[in-house]
Image (cartoon, rainbow over all chains, first blue to last red; front, side):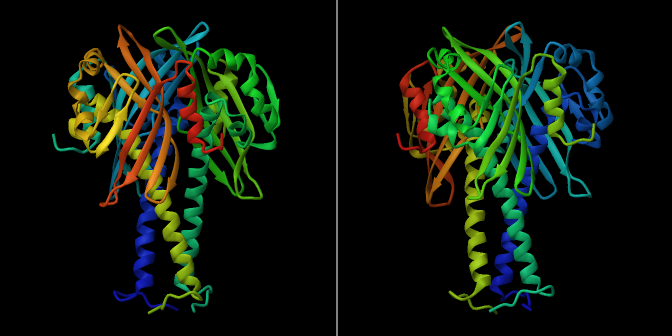
Length: 169
Length: 169
Length: 169
C-alpha cells in the first residue's frame, strides 16, 4: 500500500490526473447537454427537455421567459414550436465555447432553426446563446439560465457572444 | 514494485482513471469519425468514406440503402452526389449526442447539405442521423449502420432524434 | 515513495495516462480555439481575434491574406465585415477534424456565414477551412495559418477537405 503525502510523487501525479480528467469530463458532459436540446425539441420529448434544466432554471428568449424545467418541457405544446415541427424543422446547436469554474460553467454558442419549405429548408432563426450551468447534487450539469437572442444586428446579441470569451470589456 | 490488489488505493485510482480516459477517448474518436464524413464526401475521397464503415456496414437513406463500405465509397461516383459537388456543396454534421456501451455506441446528430446557387448556398437537405457504431478488433470505431431521414415533418425522422436520448418511450 | 523505473508498472501506467490526457486536452483546446473565432468576429472583439493567432500567423482567404494577429484583429474594422455585422450575422464553425503531432496540429472544418435579410438568414459563405496550429512556449495553441476557400466547385476547396483526412493522395 502506498501512503499518500506531500512528498509522494505518485499521489501528486494521480491527483493531478484526476483533476484534469474531471475537467475533460465536465466539458464533455456540457457538450452533450447542449447537443441534446435539439434532439429533445425536434423529437418532441417533454422529458428530454425537462431534464436538461434545473427545476427552477430559466429559458429566456426575446419572445418569452420560460420559468422552470416544466415550462421548458411544455415547449412541445407551444403553437409556435408546433408550427415548426409540422412541416419539418431542426434546432441545431454549434460546438459551444465553454468555461468551467468549480460547480458553475458558461457555454456560449450559436443556434439555428432550419424550417422546411417545399424542397428546401429556410433559416428562420440564428441566435446567440449563453448557457449558465450548475452541477447539481447528483453531479449532473443542468441549465440555470439560457439566454437566446436573435443575431439581428442588436448590440445585445453581439455582447452575448463576446461575453463568452471572458475578455474584460 | 507495487502489487495491485483490492486493498490498494493506487491500483483503484489508476484503474478508475484508465476507464474514464478510455470513455473520453471513445467519445473523441466518435466525434472525429462523424466529422470525417463530410470531408470525405465533399473532398471526393473514396478511401476516406470506405474506412469509416465496417466492411459490411450499411448507410440507409430514404433514397437508397448502401450495403457495405465499398458501396459507401462509391458515393463519389453517384450522379446525385456529383450534381452537388460540381456547383459546390458542404455536407455538415452537427456535434453528435453519443452513448457508449462497451464496444457499441450510438451517435445522433443533424446533417445539412448546403448547395451553391449563384452567390449563395441553399439548404437542400436537413436530416436526422442515427449512427450505430462498433469497435472493431483493431480498436477502431466503425459504422455498422447509419440511418439518415429528412426532417420533413415525418414521425420517423422525429423518432430518430428522440431515440438518441435513450428515454423510455 | 515510489521509484520510477522501467520495471515499475505504476510508473508505466501513470506515464501512459499523462500522455493520453495530454492528447485529449490538446484536442479540447483546439475545439475551443476554433469555436472562439465566430464569437470574437461576430462579437466585434479585436482582442478575441488577435489572441487566437500567433503574432506572425496568417489568415488566407480568397479575397485577402491577413498577415499577423494584429491584421486579423483589425477585421472588426473591415467594411465587408461591418456590412455583415450591421444587419446581423453568424460565423459558425463546424466540429473540426483534428490531427495532433507533437507541438503542431491541423484542424479541418466548415465555416458558414449566415446573414440576416428581413425575417430570414441567407447563407452567403460556405467554406472549407484548414487551420495549421502550433503550441507556443506558454503551452497555448495558436493559429499559424488558416486557409479559407469557398466551396464553390473548385478543386482547391475540395482538396483542403480531403487533405485534412491525411490519406495519401
